[in-house]
Image (cartoon, rainbow, N blue to C red; front, side, top):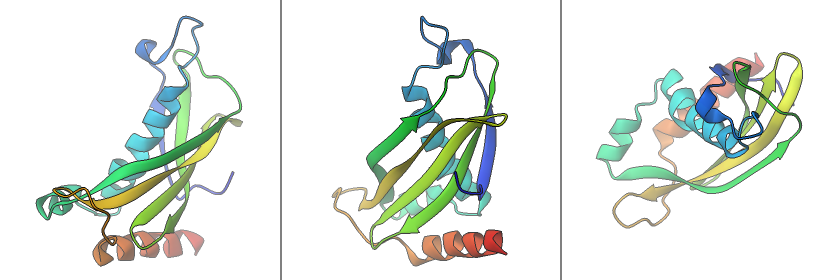
Length: 141
C-alpha cells in the first residue's frame, strides 16, 4: 500500500453489513468511489458542478479491488487515495482501505471523462489535471 495522498475515515453502519455481520463487499467499492472522486477533488478546490455545467462528467469504466480482511459493525475504516494516473481522457485512482494497522482492501477505479450529452469520451480538462498534479507534487515534498 502506498502512502496516502488523501484519507477519510468511515464508520461501519448496520446497513453496510450482510447476514454474516461483515461489511458487504460492494460497500468497499462504493465507499472508495464516493471518496475518490467527489471528496478528494473537492478537497483540492475542484468544483464538480462547474464541469457539469459545461457538459463534462466522469464515469466509472473499470473497478478492481482485492479483499484482504473483513470489517464489522462500528469499525472505523480509513479510505485512502494512494495514487493517481492521468491519461488523455481517463484517470485511474488507486486506493486502500484499512482498519487500524490491518489492510482491508486495495485496488483502483478508472474514470473516463465524457461529454454529458453525447456520452463520448473527451480530454480531461486542463484545470482539473493541473490541480491533481499540483497536489501530488506537494504530497511528494
